[in-house]
Each structure stands twice: as C-alpha cells, then as structure tokens.
Length: 594
Image 1 (spheres, rainbow, N blue to C red):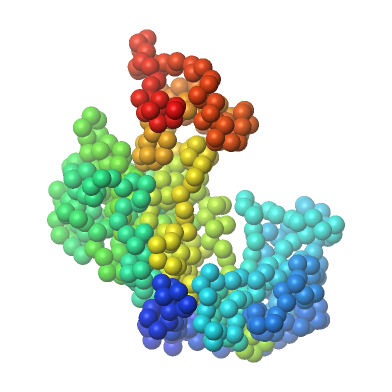
Image 2 (cartoon, helix red, strand yellow):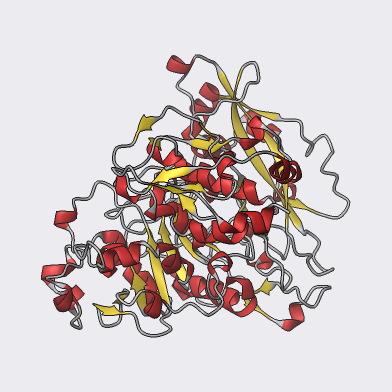
C-alpha cells in the first residue's frame, strides 16, 4: 500500500462493538454522560514508504505526539503554541521534498484544493501553519489528563503574508493525530481510520443514543408542531413509501416510521429512470416489484444505495420523491400537488434523512456497497506517530451543488436527524449535539445536558424571516413554477413567528418593510406569474434590507409602526385579472400595534 492512501485492514472485520452510555460514566452533573469503550481499527503496516524521511525543515519543527494533546500546566499562549504562525516552507520546495518527506506530502495533499498555479497566479507562495486547541463541551472525569487536543491548521500565503484562497468557501484544513497514537486514554477529536465500507453498527449506535437521550430530536420538527400529533397518513392520504423489505411501493401505514432521502437530481433524463406513474403504480405495489430486471436497473444508484442504508439500520420504509409521488397525477386535486405542498411535513416527520451532499441521483452513496477504498489522507511521521487530514464537512456542504438548490433548503432545515454522505464518509447530525463522523472520535461529547438544545430559537423574529428569504434566493430551481412550493414549509414558521402569511413570497405582516428587499447579485426577470415587486419575480440573491433603510433595532421598528402611517396595499386577484384584493393581515393590529 502506498503512503497516504486510504487505509483499511482485513483484520478489522471483527470491529463490531461500539461505545455505550453507562450511568457510572456520569460526570459532575448527573444529567451529563459520556461514551466510553470506543474501539479503533488497527493501523495497517506498510503505511510509510521505505525511503520516507523528514526533510530538514520539518525535522526542525520537532513534532511529537505530545504536541497534539493538552496536559495540565500547558500554556497555549507560549511561543510554541501561541497564535504566531510558523513556516513550513515554500510551495515549490515542498513539492520537491514531498517525494520523501511524509509531512510535506501530508500538508500538500491537505491543501490541494487551495494550491496555486505559480505560472498563472504569480509567486512564489509559502505554506505556514498555526496551532489550534479543540475543547470538548463536556468535562471529562478527573482522571483524564488530556481533556483537549491540538491540531495544525496549514494555509497558503503570498510572500507578503497575504492569505491565498481558491475554493468557494473559506478553507480551514485541520491536521490531527491518529487516535491510536494519542498519548492519552481519552481520544476526543482525534482522527480515526475508516473502513472501505460503512460500519452500520456504529451508525445504529449514533441513532440509538440520540433516540434514548435526545428528547428534542424526537417527533416533528418543533417549528412544524401543531396542537395534535402529526399523522402523515391522514395529512397526505396519497402518501406512499418504498418498503425495503418487500421491495415495493406501498401506501404509508398509520404512524409510519420512515427515512427520507434528500438529494440533487443532476442532469438525469426523467424518461430513463423508474418513476411512479398512474399506469405503473399498481404494478410497483406488488411484492418484489422493485427487484425485477425491468425495474431495478432503472432505479438511480443513489436511491438504490439509500434503500440498502435503510435496511442496514434496521428500518423498513423510505420516502423518495420520484417513486413515492405519482409524477403524472397532476392538476386540481391531484396527489402530486398534495405531496408537494407538504414537503416540509414529509422531511420534518422523518425519523432520519439521508442526504447525498456531493453527488447526484446517479452518483450513489460512497461506502454502502463493496468497492474501492474510500480516500483518507494519513501519513506516518515516524513509527507510532501518524497524522491525518480531518476534512470539515461544513466547508464541503457550503461549496456543494446541494447547497445551491431550492428544494434542498427546507429539506435540510426541517430534518431532525441527518445522515450526510460528504467527503467520502458519513456524518450524523441531530438537534442536540455536535456531529458524529467516521473519521474522528466524537462520541465522548455525544450527549449534552438534558433539556438543552444547541440550536436555540432566534429572538430577532423579523431578522429570522429575513435570513430565510435571503438564503432561499441564493438558490436555484429547475422548474420556475416551484418557486413558492419549495419554500412552503417556511410559511408555517412565518405564521408562528410573526403571524404572517405570504403574499407572492412577501410576508403580509411588516409588508412595507419586506418590500424593501434589495438585489445582492445580478438579477434576471423570472417568467410566469411572479410579480416584479416581489423577490420571487427575479432570479438572483436578494435580501430584505430594512436595517440599512431605517434601523437595526427591533424595538424601534415596532415603535415606528405605532406612529407611522401605513400604506394600504392591494394585489391583483389573479395574474391577468384587473380585480384587486387588499393585502391585509388581521393579526397585525392585534399582535403588533399596541
């Protein structure tokens, strides 16, 4: 095996026992528990090249495993670990030395997305690094002598010290010690080896801990909660599911526990894939129908893999748009519009949402089926001392096509538990704690104090609505007619937060203020029935800039509404109608003008 390639070991097949929560692991507050007994895959031999040797520059750094943990008495403000950046070397020199120097090789591979082309970008460029300390939110037992770790954060700079960025988002790579080599019994935030295939026992453990200890992650998304429990089989009578046990399409049973799939279609031709239609839905409802040669090969690979994931985590039902909505049952009263109008409920009520962040319908989900080893950048600095690049999924998410699509916005926001396929691995995110990931030990901080929630609700209600509209306008839609459908679930939030309904996408509470939206990028007029006075009538990022026009103080805005004269607004009853109706919200005076 060549150095730095994805690592795996046949002996790791017995890796099946996972960390568990025990009462004896309570720390201080009895409501806080940690997970112990996190097994680690053995490090395979042959990770280093026979000719590997640190170059003089890297050797002079005198890095040891001890540098990557924080022990009592350590001073992070010292010259060694302080904020002052240190030099790895010039990019060209490091490229030459990387053939033999494992640290140069690791840093260059880590920075590959940011590496400048000196012929086009000018030069020379240099690579610098700084130390950062990562701390757990949960205190460790008194016996733990290393409650925090250090990581290296390399970056590319010009000779004048100006940071160089090439990627869409701010790229802040992290290099940390492999958990196997950390000189401490607790391995929080340390890197760990991943297998070529996903360890679904570990995934089930993440979900089970969440179900047992995270009450806020259960049931419907809180912003979609109603006076009575949501039963999708009643809300959407035509709701269908993929039954992964019987391999068919079925009507959702009462109190159905299911997984939803969120993905990007890509350039797929709808005529070439299997979709539920009025003329085949009865056939697809027969047991085993999805496994027949006539149908199976037409199911996009990402959907097939999602079916395997659902079965592997011990669940039965999967919701996917192309198969669970009868695509040609359109028109007034059609089941397609029933489902589209309630997409927020579909994702908000799902027990888990599988999210394909990096690919499209035909890409598949990496690690689900037997295949090539998943890439993991690890280098052996010296025997017993390995360092690894630890990609941050947030940066990949921001830069992904997934985050540019209109429909995925509400799918992401209303999903309580997310299993994201990103950067060649899986990341599990719920409402109450930090992400769990394959390539880093994070189970120790997996549970937070009962009753707390990392994602607290915004106190700035007008600002919260503005942020939603701003984020949505950054995204694109294949079908312009979906402009209101793809944000329909947020209407529930607008109604709850500020008592507003949407008038062509503009909240009818604070209507004057929300008409002050401003373009943030080049705009083009949308065709169809969207009016020019609304952000929905234009393709391009926009924001309701009420702060720039008047004040950033919510208190002053509310006070102004008591004294300022309101304009009486009317809208056309229909796009081609001369009849107008008043834009009027009966809640406005009662709730906000006092």
